[in-house]
Amino acid sequence: MPYAIREALAAFRRAPVLTGLSATMIALSLLVVGLFGIAAFNIQRVLERLEARVEVVAYLRDDADYRTVRAAQNDIQRLPEVRETRYISREQALEIARRELPEFRDLFGAVDNNPLPASLEIALTPGQRGPEAVKQVADRIAAYGFVEEVRYGQDWLEKIFLLRRVAGAATLVLGGAFALVAALIIGAAVRMAIFARRDEIAIMRLVGATDAFIRRPFLIEGLITGVVGALLALLVTHVIFNLISDSLVQLEWLPDRHVLGLLAAGGALGALASTVAVRRHLREI
Image (cartoon, rainbow, N blue to C red; front, side):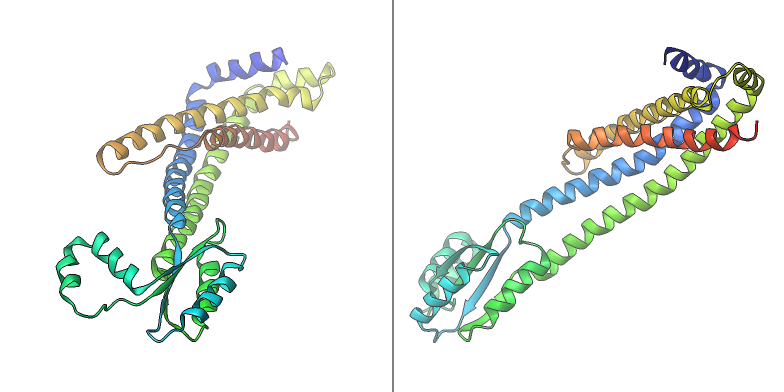
């Protein structure tokens, strides 16, 4: 292994331009992944905070029988998606409106009759706050005859989930495209190194060196190149992250497992590109 490491490090001195270009392309590919990863992670965090506030509100008819509503409330509470149900009377609704909407306090105080309906507020359990799960609960509640209307913010909930899916897909597509280019450049650098050392490789084969022994320095070279590219991508990503956080909107940095995953992806990309190039071109020597 020391021989393989020495040869891998020597390769950087022999072809610094190609090595730098390979690391730069890996950095560009992972930079795209990192930036979209930050966007997707922050969207996920916003979504989690919004999900915690997701609830289904069923507005009741004025002639709804209280005992019937209470019986239905107990049935709704037993649904696996439901964490808690709260009955809000018309009087409570008016008091809440006066407290939380001070700009309309005079209006609510001037009316003789309470215009607000009673309602059931249904809080959902974690993991059951996606658009499909919420819609199913809302549809079941809307089937009760005493329910006038059911609301749960369907439009914005679906748009947020769609935005998360789009961000994830864009990360994979753009990051994959840059990764492919980086792999081609790493492969070209490895091929040039192999042909530059073809006489040395031939002699090593004559004295009994196996292909695995010959391939090892090139694989380590690709691995190191990938890790260097990933570190460069993380550095640039963090700079852009700070610029955006300081000037536009406060963002959260990626968790440690994502950072380690980006480093692992860089090393794996470099090692894989080197493996393919070495295996293919050693057969030609």
